[in-house]
Structure formats: C-alpha cells, structure tokens
Image 1 (cartoon, rainbow, N blue to C red):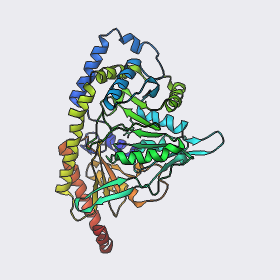
Image 2: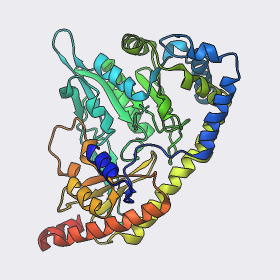
Image 3: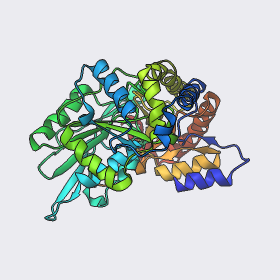
Length: 413
Ligand SMILES: Cc1ncc(COP(=O)(O)O)c(C=O)c1O
C-alpha cells in the first residue's frame, strides 16, 4: 500500500489507471442523502445535544433505536439495547475483539483468532497485539476451468475450533475476493464454535441491508454465539467512522468495556445523521437501488473486458463475483510473483493491489498467495477496460516466457 500511495503521489499529472482504490465512489444520490440528513439535524433542537455533550459509551440513543427497530422488523429478531454497540468504524471493533478474546490469557495460554477462509481482509493482519494469535486456514478451490472462474470454499476437513480458540472472524461478502459464504457454510462454522462457547464475528461491511453490496442472495445469520458486525463506510459514510456490533449481551459488554477505556464513545454526529437515514428507510432503499447496481455493473464491465482481452488458453481465473467492491484474479503457475506483476503493470500506468497481503495468519507457504491480484471496482468503465487490456498484454508475455513443459502443465490445470 505504501508503494501504491507513493507511486500515485509521485505520478501526479501522469494519468494512472488506479484499480487499487479501497475508498468507495461518492455516488451523487448517496451524498445528497447525507446532505439532507445534515440539514435536518442542523435545523433541529437536537443539534446541541449531539455535538456539545458526552453520551453513553454504547452509542447515540436515537441511532441505537433506529438500528434495533430496523433489524428487528426486517429479520424478525428481538434485539434490545443490551445487544448493540456502536464503535468508531468497524476496524476498531475487530481490534477490541482481537485483544479481548484473542491473545494471551492471564495464565499465559494463547487464544487463537481463527480466520476460517483465507484469503480475507488484510486489515485483520494487524489487529492483535500478538500477531502469532492469528491462524488462517487454506481454502478448497472450486474451479470452472472452461469459464476461467473459481470460488474459495472453507475446507472443513482442516478447520479446527477448540478450547484454545479465542474467536472466529470472516468477512461476508469478502474483501478481497467478493466471496459470499453460503448460509450452510456459516452455520457449519458456528456449529463448530458453539460447543466451545467461541464467538463468531461476521464482518458484514458489505452485507445487506446497508450497503447491500451482495450480488447473490444472502441472509444475515443471527445465532447466540455470533456477532453481526456492520459498517456504514460503504454506505457512504467512511469519514464518519461508524461500526456496529449486534450480538449476545455477554460479548457486547466485553467490547463496550474495552471501548470505554479506549475512547469513551464514538462520535455522535455521524450517528445522528445516520439515525435519520435508517429510520426513514432511505438508506436501505438507496443501498438496493443505487449502491448495489453501481458496483454490480462495474463487475459486469470487468467480466466483459476479461473475456474480450485476456488470452483464452492461459490459466487465469476470476473469483465468482458475489459481492463487495473488488474483483480477485488468480494466475495459476504464473512465472512471476504477484508483486512482480504489480510492478510490470505499473510500467503501463495501471495500479492494482498484489494479493499476498490478503493472507494474514496463513502459516504454511502456499504458492497461490503469490499468484493473485485485487482489482477495485471504483474506476470508470473506460479505465477498467483499458486496465484489463494492459493486464492481458503483460500476462500473455509472462506466460509465453515459460519453458514449454511448464506452460503445457499450466494450460491443462
Ligand atoms: C471487510 C472489511 N472489514 C472492515 C473494514 C473496515 O471498515 P470501517 O471503515 O468500518 O472501519 C473494511 C474496510 O475496507 C473492510 O473491507
């Protein structure tokens, strides 16, 4: 990321095709919603209460009410204010969990943070004060070679959740792959964790009802040992830092104590405007009618560009696009690493993200981790098409450099 930032900064004036961005696009309808909610807040008697006073460490009451009422109605739940915590962004939530439930116990035992399906969000890599606590599991690969498509699946023959596990964590939809674990897979993970009383945190930063960045059907799952973690960042408020944990009171209390010690409570301004957008139903509607179609269309543009430009005989695979704001490409037996591919693309003015930082906690050496890249769906259609055209040029040349025997194996795998 440091190299990407420095490259873009140094290249000001030079027109890079930036396919690396993690920042969501500012969509006019979404920005307008936040302007309207802000105007409403400024004109209300509530304003002073929001910005001129401390509040509860749990979160701003009208926001809590709006979220609980929406979730209870939408999913037939009976959540109360004991089941919710608002945090300054969801990243902080994973930091609280990592250091409250994972790491060393008072008697020196290491409690693992289990990532059941690697690759996953690179931001999990630094959440624990004890990096050795992170334990990720290599996935099974479901490959459709003719369609140049694949999907990661949890490998239940390997996955272990024991009394040494602190908690389980995964993103659904997943950053970087766009994977959506099936309901059945989520239940199987929760079933493994339940007998040990191990909490399962489901990072729902891209899930319905907001931002609803799922392109395939999915239902948020609520169970006693599960914590549903939301973020309003991809629903247009990354600058306001709003994360939400919904779960069992015993888990929420631990997280809330951590937050109180760290920062007392999250900022109330963003919560006050978001309360309006959630209570009116406007945020959920915009998520479905504007945010989701925008990124789903970008994924379609990417697929068309890959079909048009990429060499049909080379063993490249696009992960099934089931959600989020990224696409994930795997180049089997690529005779270069992901970082070398990144550097070569830079020569063409195209910036992508090398895949290897997305395997935090994976302890075994696996070549696959150096054969992938992440492409952001935030660029324009023309940029995506041109970026893929350059990618095709670079990849074609790389596979052609391969000794004949290796190439033959690569093409048939
Ligand atoms: C999967 C995932 N989880 C969490 C986060 C952090 O989001 P927040 O802005 O809520 O801290 C991100 C940010 O990109 C993400 O992609």
